[in-house]
Every structure is written in structure tokens, then in C-alpha cells.
Image (cartoon, rainbow, N blue to C red; front, side, top):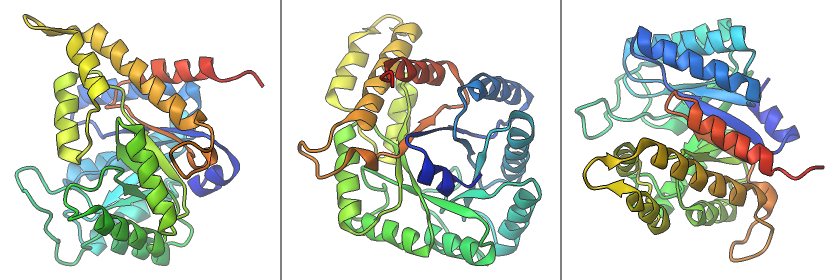
Amino acid sequence: MLIRDRLAHKRPVFSFEFFPPKNAKGERVLWRSLEQLAPLEPDFVSVTYGAGGSTRTRTVELVGRIKRELGVEPLAHLTCAGSTRDELEAVVERLLEQGIRNILALRGDPPRGQETFEHTPGGFRYASELTAWLRDRWPELCVGGACYPEVHPEAPSGEADLRNLQAKVDAGAEFLISQLFFDNAAYFEFTDRARGAGIEVPIIPGIMPVTNVKQIERFTKMCGATIPKVLHQRLHAIADTKDGYDPQEVFWTGVSYAAHQCRELLDRPPGGPFRRQASTVAGVHFYTLNRSPATRALFEILELARPVR
């Protein structure tokens, strides 16, 4: 199943993102999460891809196992970072051998300890270059890209970031998945600007329910997302100055906030302060951090809130 076909015939789509585990214990945790989420029948699951050789291997092995054993469609991440064209070609051929036809083309983050992205000789500088190469070399693939509702941290301006996004779409990206965000207004304003610039491909919002306050503060700093005042106040209202944060209180605060986010994204009526139609929100992509409880709880809340048809 190609994701572009699913997006053309089904709305909303729901998907989950995982990252390759580093050891046997992490692999057990991840696979248990996948088995728990599979009965929810996600439209696809994505698996991230790092610059290191072992991480690449685990990504290929994991997406193949997901497809074979769980019957869920995988979306394999592929990055420019640390790879030559020949190395990337070998990875794609291995994916094709396992029946994987969906790839998320990314530039990739700088390796740990390196502040800026450095082009690998014999590789690609930009996600748009990688996208164009994939679409030209393997026309049977469905290729997606990433976008940043609150602007890529390295972009000099929102306008420059939008031009880079347009380059990805012009190169052949057939859908976009957004970086995580907690302010729906930022997403709606971003999609308005993207549509105004002529970007018409589906833009799937990325949602991460907060389960660890320090962790989410670190993530938002890295990706340029902001924590709205209302969420910040809710989280700090449950802080215990002696013991930090109660994990259960954080869990349910995060799930509740994310559920309201998703409902507004999926159900907001046309009109209002944003120039958009409700159908422009193609679905929701959940960032799981390889654990299922928060995502399962959130998904079940959304299912319970769905109107009876």
C-alpha cells in the first residue's frame, strides 16, 4: 500500500513513529509497543534512521519485520547525513527486497557532538536532492518529506523555510509530516502560508503527548517548537518542589492536552480566523518514543469521542 493512495481514499489517517532500539532490552520494549498498537489498525508506522551504520541496519530490519509479522505498512526514514549515494542505494535496494515502497526523505540532523550539518562527499546536501533522486531512480516508490510549523531551527526566516519546503514538493514529495507542535494556531497558520505558496500535498500534523517534562523541554528546544502558556501552566501546576513531577499526573495532563489538540485539528469547522477547510487536515502522526500507553490512551479517547454515524 502506497501512502499517497491511502491519503487519496481515506481521511483521517492515523500513524505512529518509532526509532530503532540500541540494545536487546530496547528492542523488547519497542516490539511490545508495536504489538499493543497494531490492533488499533494504524494506516502506517514510520521508523527513524540515523547516521550510524548499526542504526541504518536496524531500521531496515525493523520495517521488514513490521510488514511481515504485524501486517502494518511501514514508512522508512532515509537521510542524507553520513551517507554516499552508493550507500543510500544499497539501503533502498534492501528495503525494496522486503516489499517496502514508502520512504520519508530527510536531510538528517548533524551527528552528536557536531553543531552543523556537513555534506558527505558523494552524497546529498538537501532533502530535496534526495527526494528527486529517489523519484527518478525508483519511480515505484512513494516519497514523503518533513515540514516545520514553527520554522526549521536553521532557517533564516519563515519565507526561506517555505521556499525550501516548496523545493521538496517540486522534487516529488507526495505528502508531508510535520515536526511536533503544541500550538494548533501555529500549524493552521503554517498550512495557510503553504497553501498560499501553492503547496497542495497533504500535510499531516505531528503530535506528541507529554509524558516527561524535562524530556519535552529538551525536544522543543532542539526542534524549535514552543510550549504554549496554557500547557506550561498545567504542567507546572502539578509540580512538587520536593519530588519533581508525579509521573501519573504528567501522563494524564499530557494525554488530555494532546486529545484536545487532536480534536481541534480533526473537527474544527471551516471559517473562523484561519483561511482553510477542515478537510485539509489529513490525519494525525503520533510520536511515540517507542512506548505505547500514552498513544493508546490518546487514540482510544479520540475513538470514543468520534460521532456515531
